[in-house]
Length: 566
Image 1 (spheres, rainbow, N blue to C red):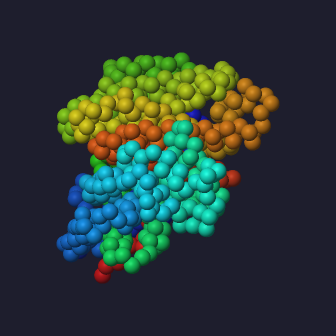
Image 2 (image 1 turned 180 degrees about the vertical axis):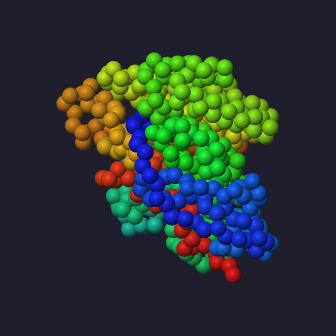
Image 3 (image 1 turned 90 degrees about the vertical axis):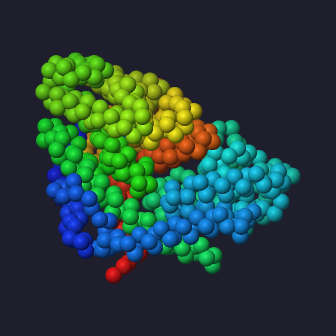
């Protein structure tokens, strides 16, 4: 998440969202954020009405009882369809589940989806007679996503006597597209899925540049609404529900941005650390993408606060201390004691106190909600992060370039991913929901893979943060020093292969945890974190982030497919 590069202060110029008055006179948050433009990830200001309850606004109108009733009715209608006998034992039920997930409304129907997939799993035969390439690929993808044990060998039925996929399948574009999607759920050693990806990708990869499994559902939902066609009665209802859901999510997220704006302003760190990054919009985007369920507002807010400190502490290590001073700061974080604040240099004092205040508060909120205080685990995560930052600070202060292995192992820690996922683990109450069946140690491999994906993406090629000078090491630089005969092209290919391998490992770990349905919200958030990485680090030639800008504007401001009401 964080990277150790030096930011510079750049003024922000943002367009405004004007104050709107609901029918009952309640004030809508007057200005929640700027529309994202390159180099501008600040939030302008927040309304003074934040402490008051807000009505949800839809296209300038409040969500009245009529809207709420219609929204609830559509939820009920889809639930009834999922349970209906008409869908039993038919591929239609899998298509419905797929559409629900693609439209990012699946969190409303977890129990019903689980029942549909379990029914398919129990009734499936080893031969899968009558399943087309499309149907079997969809069956495989959905059940594996939800933790059911499905062997990739089921695709052998589409191979000829020569052991390769039959040539006639190349005419089945619809089937190949679903096969390509299914192949994204590959784990280590599943050669048949690698073969399936290569076979189908030769024909459909241009159509599926962003496979569903590697994409943020909320980012692609609007396109799916437009593309989702058919005569089935449930499609119309589901599309209308998805549009209403987008409206609800947009309004909730805008209100959350207003709260983050107020919190960040009141914290005072932007004024104290003027050289540090001031990008709460970007920091919140990580949380918004990871947790798409509108009901998880508290978790998104608390997670954003933690992400904020990852970036700010990273900048402190870059800009505000000598190696000796940074050693003292790291020691202080491990001590986690307000009394040691006086031993810190002035620029670090406010940050240190704010870190302790915020993290202790998060621990208390988790205790009140879930019955345990994870503060020891949270403190340990922050200490490990500072340890990794300190290692890097000493490397670059001395001019020492580590081995590529040393760099990557430490870089996974300095990415901040472990801080984010440890906080998420407790914010989502995984321990409570699983009755202790899933422990913090059980997510170690997920943390490692997501962190490696982030670090390798960040270091890929010449990517540079739009507010950072990029004078840092990278995996590619370290590897090329170790291997003088290597070329930049071969090393980049190596990094691509490494990212692919980490995805396979991440898939395996997430599917393993998904066997316990109570941890599905955590695995989904972890996958979303990995899915966000390309958006966060796809810099263009001007060191800007056009894809991230598109994601933010599409998610929060684009209302082209929303339901309109008088």
